[in-house]
Image (cartoon, rainbow over all chains, first blue to last red; front, side, top):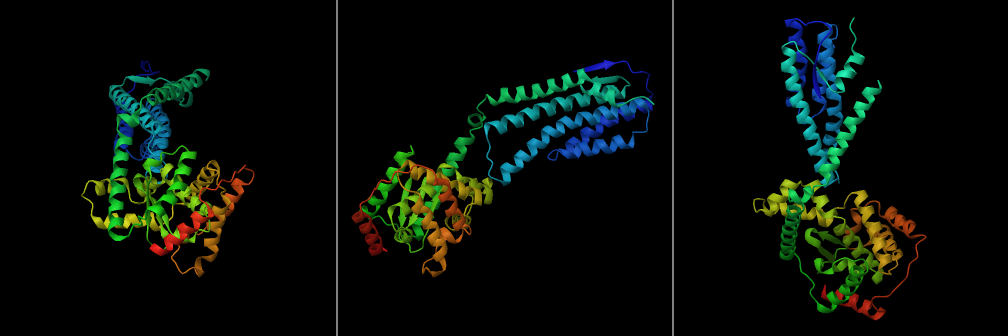
Length: 144
Length: 267
């Protein structure tokens, strides 16, 4: 799911720190805005916009961090509004709801661990590509 | 590009497979959700009934209860509803009202029976309240308006009696929301048809009360909280339009008249 790849050039210390921060940013926002799935996406977008004119290595990792947020955002949003409808409308807790919440919990934990791992590795200048997101990022993010 | 689409589809399949696999586990049983809800409902039902018993007079006249019971038994039997779980209480009260409490307590005021022109109208009201019970509307309404935490605290003894009294008022004199009322009306129509009782008198009863509400000397709780009673009545008529309806008589004319007479005397 996560592979170490050769990047087109060896990133410098400053680049590695910035790239790593893009993952940390999504992690911090994830913890801070836990009940509201949109918070971590907004934080990552802000970080991405702030670094979109940076070097290729930084841009690439900011993009991967941003894209990885989208899938979790979709899943969490459904879970969030489902929970709201249970609290405020006629919806009731069902087996389907509980299994959905556990499913998104598993996906969130996997994403959380992958993000920490990637942040550590990227900080050391190691280029980490996620399965699917890595290819998608390469497709979107091109060197100037 | 093809590789990326395939990878995306794999993630999607993985997500749904995970959800489906987890769905196979009976989480409701695992977390004892149904058990907790049922226990809370039982305790709430008893709590509310205790309050009513202290403030109102129940009509325990055997001949009255017997006649209403004939109708109730027939409806339950025809619709595969366990009659034993329904606790029928006829209260000596002039107001036109009927409501369901948690744990299947069915409260009907003598004023409502008196206002019914025939057994089919009364059957309609009974079916409407049974529908609220069967569709879990009572607990849904309480959970939505009071909150589960308050309900649980009421049953564990930490809640005060004032809260219980106020929430009881929610059930006895406030309507359910439009969707739940409509669902209960149409379910009641189905129950009536299955029991070979014509739902039209029930629709007429709603219409009549809504039209005459201001002229009636009694408080029409069963209608006054439903501003769309006329619309509901028309909806029932529309719903039963092309349905085959058999009409059985459960109480003889004599029995129905004596029921109303006895109700009047005991009030």
